[in-house]
Image (cartoon, rainbow over all chains, first blue to last red; front, side, top):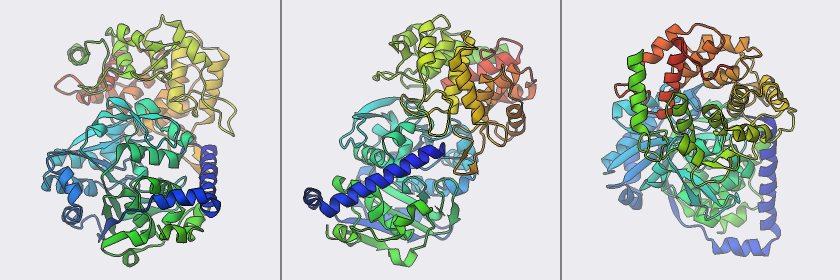
Length: 344
Length: 259
């Protein structure tokens, strides 16, 4: 990424936050009371095996969508915005959501009756979106499917008050296309992340933050806290569905310089925290130790495996052992307050 | 070439809003960057651009924070010395390991290659070539040259690993350093542009090569062929204006970024 010292700073912030959250749970009756008031809702997360990008992805997504009647209701006759993870054109296949997954998702939402499906992304590092689309292969897919693309970095922007406001920004500008969508679908890739631990459907929403206001990269979000920013964006925009491209994931020094893991899964659901918690478990990591997932507990998120109905495959049957950077070794260990979260 | 230029200008004229500004994409709201580039291409958007000034800087609609496009405004509106004054005082947060400071995209964040390049170009084009702030910005850019000779958008390496350069960032940084030399960057661009022929990359590389006195006829022909039937490049205002500026320079006309 951009700067080593920035990386150090964010890791320090991560540990500080994690310590604060864990410490609060251990000693704070007030915190405990607060968490008990926010009992985690039951969520359904669907896992399908998909060994390669040649698998019948559209059929799998269509079948998976049947598990979520409220999502189908929102999609029917509505404007569905698909938000893939499109960051770099170097090593495009390893880094970005694969075009086949985007194509399959677009076809699936059309098949269930969406009035319009658009693909939208505001690449976080590159201003050259045209090159990014071509080198990633997504441009060709969009043309062949006649699917519209909106560069969220260049769209008109409007301020939105942040209900959670962990960043203390008070409000954040978001693109018109995102605000006009009836259903936002996050399409991340299954990856480790050198600042956030893991990058999945919630972190993927960073890409809706417009570069024209926040720059390339969106450095304001790093200064305001990655975890705080992830939650503020999710709470403000309420993305309604997620499909994680875990066919080829990334371990180690993600999101750009890690190694490919052939995990062979698609993970989907309408509670993005539950989807990310499940995906984290599929990576062989403990979601209770991911700070932003814990912050999402106060906003309808579900981490507790006992409150996540696993549909199709079980986590155990597809679990892998993703390598993490040394600084995130704690994600491999049960969180000290895991048992407490289990009780919620 | 006149025909292409006229078609491009016609697209830009049709895209201009009644408020006097231009959007990035047709139907969008007026925004400073496309407005500045349309103005550099020869159209009049001064009224709208001046309406976006708060203090000495450009701001976005609905926002009061000084915006990075103040640099572009200082190029598009050369008579506005307040932009120069603001740029001379603005700086990005210093990293823990870097002495020199450039310019940020957003206030109170780190310096990055692109906004630093825009600011240096704006200051130099407004006669501030030897100002200490300009020297510090140049030093910051030089400290971030990648192993391949060009520029990434941020640092040259992170945690011991070299980062790759990109064409647009390299072309902009080389333009910003055109009075001091950037031979490695020109070699990088020459090698890379053939495999990265996007409109943005082509236009900036042509402007860069032209500023250094290098021929770019083939690149200009390639860029010209990318013009759409509606006169635009990619249907985007800032890319269309930038392409027109590149073709103008390549055809022997002015180069708005030549210092």
